[in-house]
Amino acid sequence: MKRILSQLCLATLLLATTFSCKKEDDAQVTNATIQLEAPTELPDTSLDLFEITFTNQNSGSSSTAITNATGLAKITLEEGLYNISTTTEKEVISDQGEKSKLNFTARLENVKVVGATQNIEMPLIRSAKTSAWVFKEIFISCSPYPNSRKFYIYDQFFEIYNNSDELQNAKGIAFGESRHVSTSSTYAWGDVTKQVALSNVYSIPEDVDYMVQPGESIVIATKGLDHRTIDPSFQDLSHANFECYDGGKFDTDVPEVPNLVVNFTTTRSFWMASMQQNRSYVLFKADNLKKYVTDNIGHKPGNEDYKGMFVDNKLVLDAVELAKEGKFNSKGLDISLDLTKAMMIGETKGKSFRRKVKEVKDGRTIYQDTNNSEQDFIVQDKPTPFVQAKN
Image (cartoon, rainbow, N blue to C red; front, side):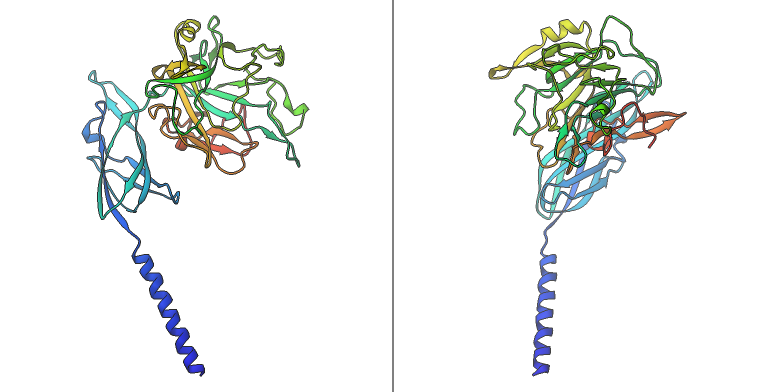
């Protein structure tokens, strides 16, 4: 009897193993070939060393492939639905013989990979030219009270940074939050390839020079207070360079911190950045900013109840799209401004988005800026206003 039971167990084990192997063998894979298409600014011979990322929308897993000199890459993928993206910096030579470094990018969404083989064409575009000014850090998620479920919303800040090696004049630089919410199923604020619709526009005064050395920053507080008086773990923004003061009866003006100019707002009381982290943020500069803003106030297409200020993508100095895991449905920025988005996963309270360090040169931090926030930003557990990272 023991021998019979032993043989039955062995047979069952063999059957289970065979079934398991067969299940793995039945997994369908596709040999994919992807071909980059060069824009006019990039010679066909400069398509090598683009790292292309394939992200499976079902599993969330990612795979990469590197292009050869002709922009061709091959990869074996499990069948499924994929987002495919790439961003690479290339040195180009103008007709006048001048050398410059430009970012080139591409993104395909919801690509169905199926069958034994598949050919995919991927047109590259030149990203918006990087500027001296970048968002170094954004903290808008709110601060948690220790050992409590309560949270504090007033110590938000944005830090912009002179990422160049030259003295820069920040006068007239404008800053705004998008009208589009990334949890929306579609973008409904006009032509995203040409403009960004904003709900608020603040700016550094245009009438006075505001010089910023290379490697120095400007901290913009929503409320320029030492919030540590509420709790020691909160942010001290009493030394912020500027604050957003809307002038309403419910707003608080801190005399020691200069106010930004309010050029446009849809806020009825006072503005706080979206704690849900589902908006985009832009820096831009326009000649005669006050007139430019006034001339470009409009409405959401098909709905005159919703106003927005529409800024030309060509005027944008820097842009970043934010998102929370599992709550991103549509982009609010053209991929030339930001190919992807910076995303927080899990608990967000007390955390900030901070730009990655590219290198430190002669003691000056140079932050990474490829117009691809997924690659350019990290999430910090503790915000660091006024502090420049070294790694």
